[in-house]
Length: 442
Image: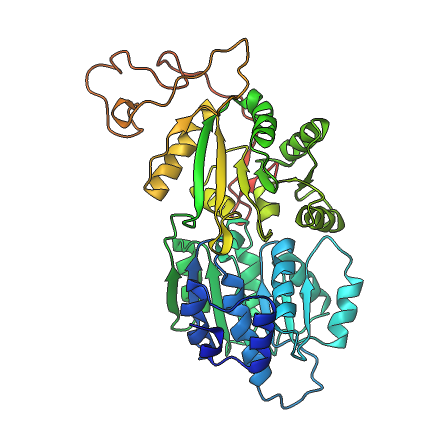
């Protein structure tokens, strides 16, 4: 199949081919045609499978073909909501790339930068607004944007918007948009919350799905290695040097952790830069641009900042800290192996992170072997951990239960004996306030 088979305008086809694309991905193949027909859609696909083009192309086509009765009207006709600044900019770039031969105007609206320039651009008029919920609400409250003419609404990465507590902001925005509109909801996963939201804001939606929601792209090779918490940084330096990794995305759980990792890598002569919510928008853009250009070999990021990072040629994703959510694990490793390419996902696993591995295994339906990294430095004050036992030897609650009293002398891979563990010192707190979920030190 070719993009021309969808009935897209010649100008849009020129933009697609100019970007180097000829054959649609699976999600594009099943989502573009009904979107062009005006249907409301709930679409899910793995990270890195081309969801952005799946809604940008039909959006551009509709606005181009639409008969505009009052061309002097400056109000936007399409709104795309995204959870992060980086993703908003990524969508804006896609609109510019595919619509290079069109006369449509677009604007990205997000926080971290001054509002004056955005207000000036809105006054000049725009057809498409790509926005994060918080900054868009700021404009709505100041009456610097009018959404009364919106014909197409897109919720991109809807699952992440809900995870980040934007549900109430999204509902407030939707209340100000005409009910007679087309709504496209795109998400990597479709949770009960997504289904509930879709039931309220979409009309008789068509649900399309490409690939398995619980598994990464086929070209991603997954590796799990033993690493105690205080030895992970040394292991990271060793791995980067041993395999000569060239374009590496490292995930840290906290902003402080990301900065600490970056400083250690720099001291080891490894060019790296951190990106997280404490960085200004200008700093984040410079960091991402430097990583894309090869100025930095390693980009260290937190989950929130990393959503929307779309860099071709990332060879390795390294989970310095294991994500607590299996969905986040899938999102993280989906930063490599994009668009049919191959890549490696490496996870450093400490003894306290074993429960997270179990959840990943349950979520994906796969069992992963935990190994020692080849040639990894072994600390003199601690013996090397034993390899993970086969499935029949796993502890109760982690696979088939063992027979006989206790564990019959069998040992856990990270514990010499099975005993009651002391409670861990609480390092982070989690907010359970509605709409405020998230780790506080992100």
